[in-house]
Image 1 (tube, one colour):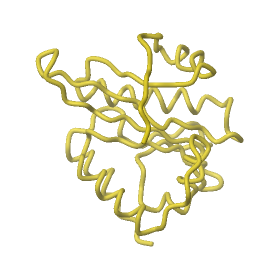
Image 2: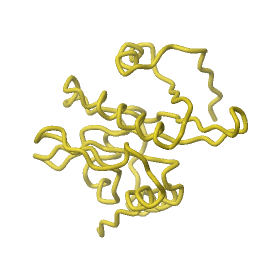
Image 3: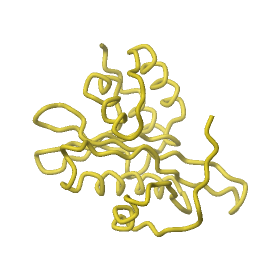
Image 4: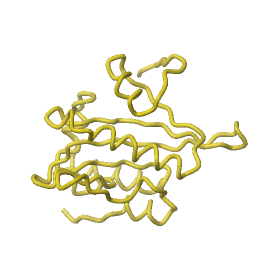
Length: 172
């Protein structure tokens, strides 16, 4: 599989902000934007730890990757790659919503934050969330919001988030 860095290039070229670059965490992990090659590094397996989902074909993954890359810096997916194994140990995304309120303000939405069960407790999740929040701040967002389970409230509080309002959903 070729390894274009369309998402990384799109974000770098679109003023991606402080959170989009590559960062090494010691010698163990590298946090960087999602790449096409990440399908074979366990990206979908990682996401399945959040919500059960059938595997994606290479074609479907590539099509969605290209679609998201076209959104530029308004949709950033970061992954943490284990430097020793090349497998992904964590992932998360921030989406920038363009609003009319707050003088056409921007809001960051944290989504699909997951740390592999075997890699939890090493600070990867906090580091990833920090990078995503940095990106949203760099894009000019006036706030970053997320939905989480009751069990994860403590984790997000440690990352600086405060409980606000009530989440509701309508699923199809």
